[in-house]
Image (tube, rainbow, N blue to C red; front, side, top):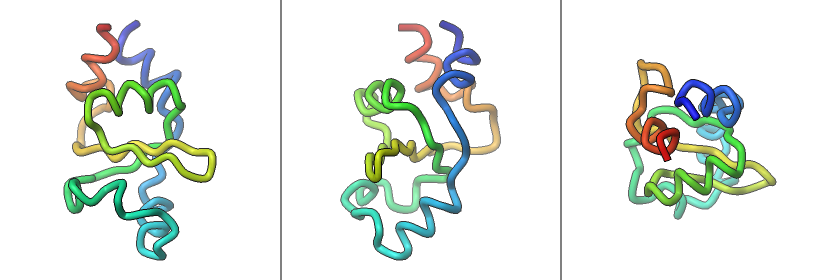
Amino acid sequence: MTAQRLVENCVLTNQTAVVDEMLNKHLLPEEYIYPFLGDVMEWWLIDSWLAERLKRENQVIIEEYGCCWWGRLASGQAICMDSVIQKIAGE
């Protein structure tokens, strides 16, 4: 699978504003992001398949309310160019 196809199929939408607001209102446990506090640049709604693979790569994943959010530690480039996405796509 190519990294582009992985992103098209598994990364659903940017939800940075939603997750930031939920964290600010303490609607999500801070334990999810404590070691990465200040490092997460974007939050993306993703499917559970990608969430499991990103967890194996020690990425920030929040699983609450029937959703999976990935705390992306990069910004400014296409998601398919992230090294972790390239690695998962190559497996």
